[in-house]
Length: 179
Image (cartoon, rainbow, N blue to C red; front, side, top):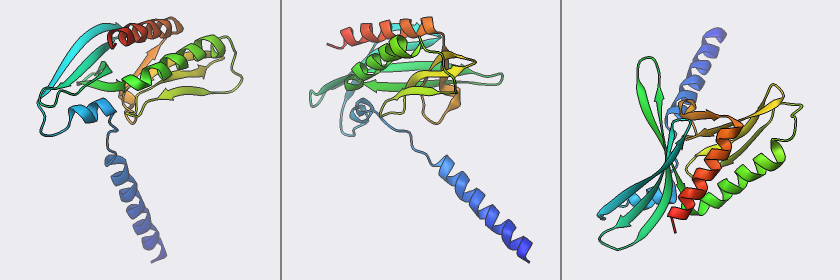
């Protein structure tokens, strides 16, 4: 009887844990919230900036054609390909977050890369939509990444240190197109 009770409790806990895992809601950037408003006629214009490690970077101009309001953002697109399927992963970075990401990349490049990590470490920048970029220690050196969707490991894009510099240049180029 006691054994049956324990099994029932474990079953309930695992179902509860599973339901919490599957009900995660994708976090939205302010630009995505703007473009998803009801009662608007929304124009989205995409300007290609470039790509790093097969992740396309674009500037997006959102315009509400009825109300006349506008906003801009950076859009990241990466196609994850497995042996059976493919899926396009997308992240949007609001205009007010770009400087923070660029500053983070510069800090990592200038102060973190020259160091040798003794312990496993992770350093990352996260946007309000869940986009993440940074570095982690691996075998006594640093490796870089970006993750487009917070809870999706298939949205990880691994980069070399040289790619991280290209990433920073593309962000600067995108920022200049937003003014």
